[in-house]
Length: 208
Image (cartoon, rainbow, N blue to C red; front, side, top):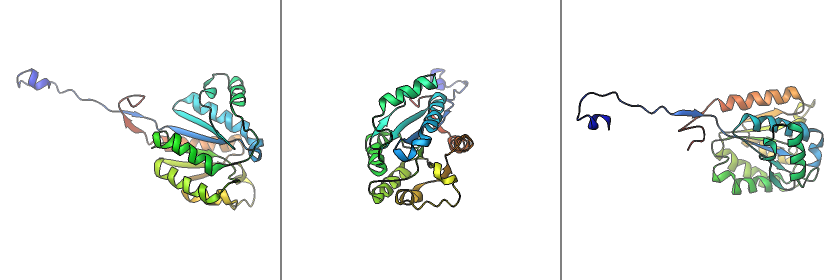
Protein backbone atom coordinates (compact mmCIF):
# COMPACT_ATOMS: atom_id res chain seq x y z
CA UNK A 1 0.00 0.00 0.00
CA UNK A 2 2.85 2.37 0.79
CA UNK A 3 4.46 1.71 -2.62
CA UNK A 4 1.14 2.36 -4.39
CA UNK A 5 0.62 5.57 -2.44
CA UNK A 6 4.04 6.77 -3.58
CA UNK A 7 3.38 5.83 -7.19
CA UNK A 8 5.89 3.00 -7.19
CA UNK A 9 8.76 5.03 -5.74
CA UNK A 10 10.97 3.26 -3.15
CA UNK A 11 9.46 3.38 0.35
CA UNK A 12 10.09 1.96 3.79
CA UNK A 13 8.06 -1.22 4.06
CA UNK A 14 5.96 -1.46 7.20
CA UNK A 15 5.97 -4.78 8.99
CA UNK A 16 3.53 -5.99 11.64
CA UNK A 17 5.30 -7.81 14.47
CA UNK A 18 3.14 -10.50 16.02
CA UNK A 19 2.97 -10.38 19.80
CA UNK A 20 3.47 -13.63 21.70
CA UNK A 21 0.93 -14.13 24.47
CA UNK A 22 1.17 -16.74 27.23
CA UNK A 23 -1.17 -19.69 27.09
CA UNK A 24 -4.22 -19.66 29.29
CA UNK A 25 -4.05 -21.81 32.41
CA UNK A 26 -7.21 -23.51 33.71
CA UNK A 27 -7.21 -24.96 37.24
CA UNK A 28 -9.84 -27.49 38.32
CA UNK A 29 -9.58 -27.77 42.12
CA UNK A 30 -11.20 -30.74 43.87
CA UNK A 31 -12.92 -29.58 47.09
CA UNK A 32 -14.53 -32.91 48.03
CA UNK A 33 -14.23 -34.47 51.47
CA UNK A 34 -11.13 -36.54 50.69
CA UNK A 35 -9.32 -33.36 49.60
CA UNK A 36 -10.17 -31.50 52.81
CA UNK A 37 -6.59 -31.39 54.16
CA UNK A 38 -5.29 -29.88 50.93
CA UNK A 39 -8.07 -27.69 49.51
CA UNK A 40 -7.11 -24.46 51.28
CA UNK A 41 -3.46 -24.65 50.16
CA UNK A 42 -4.48 -25.51 46.61
CA UNK A 43 -6.90 -22.58 46.45
CA UNK A 44 -4.20 -20.24 47.73
CA UNK A 45 -2.00 -21.56 44.93
CA UNK A 46 -4.88 -20.81 42.56
CA UNK A 47 -5.18 -17.29 44.00
CA UNK A 48 -1.51 -16.62 43.21
CA UNK A 49 -2.02 -17.99 39.69
CA UNK A 50 -5.04 -15.73 39.06
CA UNK A 51 -3.12 -12.71 40.32
CA UNK A 52 -0.34 -13.58 37.86
CA UNK A 53 -2.87 -13.31 34.99
CA UNK A 54 -4.59 -15.33 32.26
CA UNK A 55 -5.79 -18.05 34.63
CA UNK A 56 -9.28 -19.47 35.16
CA UNK A 57 -10.24 -21.47 38.24
CA UNK A 58 -13.13 -23.85 38.90
CA UNK A 59 -13.91 -25.96 41.95
CA UNK A 60 -15.20 -29.49 41.49
CA UNK A 61 -16.92 -31.81 43.96
CA UNK A 62 -20.59 -32.53 43.41
CA UNK A 63 -20.91 -29.26 41.44
CA UNK A 64 -18.79 -27.20 39.08
CA UNK A 65 -18.25 -23.61 40.30
CA UNK A 66 -16.27 -20.92 38.53
CA UNK A 67 -14.36 -18.93 41.16
CA UNK A 68 -11.97 -16.81 39.07
CA UNK A 69 -13.69 -13.57 40.06
CA UNK A 70 -13.61 -14.43 43.77
CA UNK A 71 -9.90 -15.24 43.58
CA UNK A 72 -9.07 -11.98 41.83
CA UNK A 73 -9.07 -10.05 45.13
CA UNK A 74 -5.62 -8.80 46.09
CA UNK A 75 -6.03 -9.91 49.73
CA UNK A 76 -5.74 -13.74 49.86
CA UNK A 77 -7.84 -14.04 53.02
CA UNK A 78 -10.65 -12.01 51.46
CA UNK A 79 -10.37 -14.15 48.33
CA UNK A 80 -10.68 -17.35 50.40
CA UNK A 81 -13.72 -15.96 52.18
CA UNK A 82 -15.35 -15.09 48.84
CA UNK A 83 -14.66 -18.60 47.52
CA UNK A 84 -16.08 -20.18 50.68
CA UNK A 85 -19.30 -18.20 50.19
CA UNK A 86 -19.53 -19.08 46.49
CA UNK A 87 -18.88 -22.84 46.67
CA UNK A 88 -21.87 -24.88 47.91
CA UNK A 89 -20.29 -28.34 47.92
CA UNK A 90 -17.31 -28.18 50.29
CA UNK A 91 -16.24 -31.58 51.61
CA UNK A 92 -18.98 -33.41 49.75
CA UNK A 93 -18.67 -36.23 47.23
CA UNK A 94 -16.79 -36.36 43.96
CA UNK A 95 -18.28 -36.55 40.46
CA UNK A 96 -15.20 -35.84 38.37
CA UNK A 97 -16.44 -37.40 35.13
CA UNK A 98 -19.80 -35.60 35.15
CA UNK A 99 -18.27 -32.25 36.11
CA UNK A 100 -15.47 -32.51 33.58
CA UNK A 101 -18.13 -33.19 30.94
CA UNK A 102 -20.03 -30.12 32.14
CA UNK A 103 -16.87 -28.01 31.99
CA UNK A 104 -16.09 -29.18 28.45
CA UNK A 105 -19.66 -28.72 27.20
CA UNK A 106 -20.16 -25.30 28.79
CA UNK A 107 -16.70 -23.76 28.76
CA UNK A 108 -14.05 -25.95 27.16
CA UNK A 109 -15.28 -26.23 23.60
CA UNK A 110 -16.18 -22.53 23.56
CA UNK A 111 -12.44 -21.91 23.67
CA UNK A 112 -11.39 -21.86 27.33
CA UNK A 113 -9.61 -25.21 27.18
CA UNK A 114 -8.50 -25.03 23.55
CA UNK A 115 -4.72 -24.69 23.48
CA UNK A 116 -4.65 -24.13 27.26
CA UNK A 117 -2.69 -25.76 30.06
CA UNK A 118 -5.34 -27.53 32.13
CA UNK A 119 -4.37 -28.56 35.65
CA UNK A 120 -6.51 -30.92 37.73
CA UNK A 121 -5.75 -30.81 41.45
CA UNK A 122 -7.39 -33.91 42.84
CA UNK A 123 -6.72 -37.26 44.51
CA UNK A 124 -8.66 -38.98 41.74
CA UNK A 125 -11.33 -40.57 43.94
CA UNK A 126 -14.44 -40.86 41.78
CA UNK A 127 -17.91 -41.80 43.01
CA UNK A 128 -19.30 -41.80 39.50
CA UNK A 129 -18.50 -43.91 36.44
CA UNK A 130 -14.70 -44.09 35.86
CA UNK A 131 -15.29 -44.88 32.20
CA UNK A 132 -17.10 -41.55 31.84
CA UNK A 133 -14.10 -39.81 33.40
CA UNK A 134 -11.79 -41.60 30.98
CA UNK A 135 -13.87 -40.45 27.98
CA UNK A 136 -13.98 -36.85 29.17
CA UNK A 137 -10.23 -36.85 29.83
CA UNK A 138 -9.67 -37.95 26.24
CA UNK A 139 -11.86 -35.04 25.06
CA UNK A 140 -9.90 -32.66 27.26
CA UNK A 141 -6.56 -33.98 26.03
CA UNK A 142 -7.63 -33.43 22.43
CA UNK A 143 -8.46 -29.76 23.16
CA UNK A 144 -5.72 -28.70 25.56
CA UNK A 145 -2.06 -27.96 24.92
CA UNK A 146 -1.12 -29.94 28.01
CA UNK A 147 -3.03 -31.72 30.77
CA UNK A 148 -1.36 -31.76 34.18
CA UNK A 149 -2.68 -33.71 37.18
CA UNK A 150 -1.47 -32.83 40.69
CA UNK A 151 -2.38 -35.54 43.20
CA UNK A 152 -1.56 -34.97 46.91
CA UNK A 153 -1.45 -38.73 47.50
CA UNK A 154 1.26 -39.31 44.90
CA UNK A 155 4.03 -38.48 47.38
CA UNK A 156 3.03 -41.25 49.82
CA UNK A 157 5.42 -44.22 49.98
CA UNK A 158 4.21 -47.08 47.82
CA UNK A 159 1.55 -44.97 46.11
CA UNK A 160 0.16 -46.41 42.88
CA UNK A 161 -2.68 -44.84 40.84
CA UNK A 162 -5.03 -47.75 41.47
CA UNK A 163 -8.20 -45.77 42.31
CA UNK A 164 -10.58 -46.36 39.43
CA UNK A 165 -10.93 -42.67 38.56
CA UNK A 166 -7.21 -41.97 38.64
CA UNK A 167 -6.42 -45.08 36.60
CA UNK A 168 -9.01 -44.11 33.98
CA UNK A 169 -7.69 -40.55 33.73
CA UNK A 170 -3.96 -41.20 33.67
CA UNK A 171 -3.58 -42.20 29.99
CA UNK A 172 -4.76 -38.69 29.04
CA UNK A 173 -2.38 -36.88 31.43
CA UNK A 174 0.84 -35.32 30.12
CA UNK A 175 2.40 -34.59 33.53
CA UNK A 176 1.48 -36.40 36.75
CA UNK A 177 2.91 -34.63 39.81
CA UNK A 178 2.47 -34.46 43.58
CA UNK A 179 0.50 -31.68 45.26
CA UNK A 180 0.86 -32.30 48.99
CA UNK A 181 3.23 -29.55 50.13
CA UNK A 182 4.59 -26.09 49.38
CA UNK A 183 7.62 -27.64 47.69
CA UNK A 184 5.35 -29.82 45.55
CA UNK A 185 3.28 -26.79 44.53
CA UNK A 186 6.49 -24.95 43.60
CA UNK A 187 7.39 -27.89 41.35
CA UNK A 188 3.87 -27.79 39.91
CA UNK A 189 4.30 -24.08 39.17
CA UNK A 190 7.56 -24.89 37.37
CA UNK A 191 5.79 -27.52 35.24
CA UNK A 192 3.08 -25.00 34.31
CA UNK A 193 5.67 -22.31 33.52
CA UNK A 194 7.55 -24.75 31.31
CA UNK A 195 4.39 -25.56 29.36
CA UNK A 196 3.39 -21.90 29.24
CA UNK A 197 6.73 -20.85 27.74
CA UNK A 198 5.51 -22.32 24.49
CA UNK A 199 3.66 -19.04 23.90
CA UNK A 200 1.03 -18.82 21.20
CA UNK A 201 1.01 -16.04 18.59
CA UNK A 202 -1.57 -13.31 18.93
CA UNK A 203 -2.29 -9.76 17.88
CA UNK A 204 -2.13 -8.39 21.38
CA UNK A 205 -2.43 -9.21 25.04
CA UNK A 206 -6.02 -10.40 24.59
CA UNK A 207 -5.52 -11.99 21.21
CA UNK A 208 -8.16 -9.64 19.77
